Image (tube, rainbow, N blue to C red; front, side, top):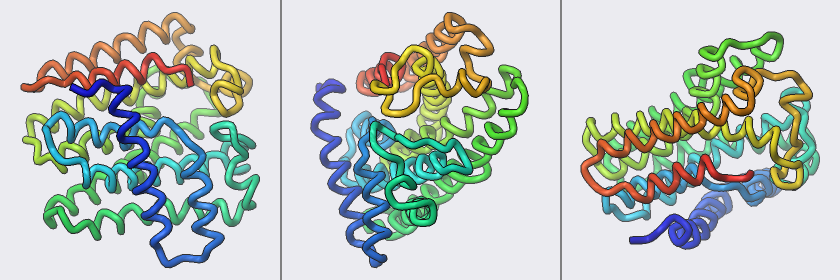
Length: 293
């Protein structure tokens, strides 16, 4: 059985190749494709496409369609980062240790590159030839919910609204179930759709995704305190400086670490309900909570 380190070494180059090729093939102005590719090439953990592939691997299915859907979800994630970094949002100069898109291409092109990376994924899924019409419609609908007003964008609005006051823990959870968790949930559930998983298996994986999404954000909040700008590739300590509602701010740093462990164990408990071995998905959960950037 392949462990996570071997899995990542094998699959991440394939994800990069497919993702950049999908952008290169579109009929669009060269400067737009350059700006789109700039942020896609900036690196990242690629956990979202890895989750798509790990679920396919769990069900013993071919990964080919997973590279395409994984690329699509990574484009959505990358668009959100480009827009988050804009002066009207978080006003960041660096992302993953490199200048943010608007610092290289200007605000107008950066905004449009984000727009393009937001819309292209839906066309990519619609044009997939190895899926049934039902699968394509399901994936497009799930991605629309996860990325839009009912998911990530809605969560970002709640996050902005919360900057003017101290959020309760329940409000903070609601922010991150949407802002961070929705796209991770899509990544995991899309793998199940591609694999032809049962409704019961999809429900189990959604439970797993719920805990993974919250664990991911709690770990980010902890790293904002314990990490350095060099390690994180973005400005460390920004949440504290802006007096933002975070898990450590509401629960203390130790309390946030305890909450992280609760969601980590919740993810593993969910996986225990699957009928077959889920070692790779367990290792991905561990990777989320143990990472240092």
